[in-house]
Image (cartoon, rainbow, N blue to C red; front, side, top):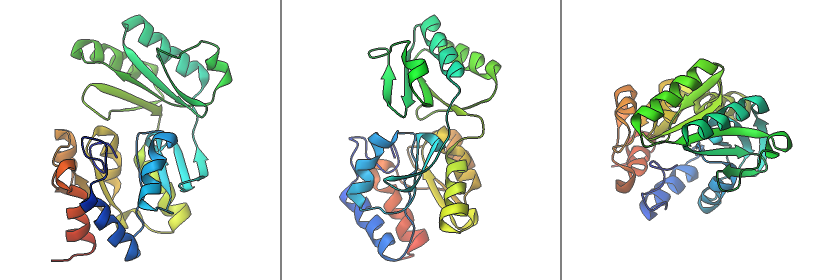
Length: 239
């Protein structure tokens, strides 16, 4: 969503919304797949009038419809505690998605560890050296899926859980279609697995270089209606 569906001011442009609605009217399944948690994503699904499945928290949650949970993958609480301790040791900003809410330095309480069901963890680290050190610690832990949604953050899910695993579940178990029939569009490393697995992988014009190198197509940026162009040229094939 961020950097792909949404402009830099976090809105769906009228042109992009128009083409999404045209695709829906033509029978195309339009599915949001995002690193955001449900509460941060659902308003955009509602704005578009989506009734299709949705993937949130980088694949840790799959929704049969935007308001009906189908599957949820949880972290072991000990892993969340370790990642929290790394944040404290390195003095870096962190956030943690739980079923019960979103937590960071401002509202963290150690009693949350046992009370909550944990979905995803993340760090925002602008210092390259510190971010590399944290990445090394995370890799040493093992059992983690590590991506990002911007060059200065790290996003962590349980191993094997990503947008590709979420979309594959949507295709195989909910829509009855093959991944070869999917067009996936993204801008960051948390989109890499799904654009590699999709029939057509699309990188936004503003995407990170790694994503562009692995995409089949590079479209215009999120501020230039890149999604609308893909719908026009590759789905509806209108002049």
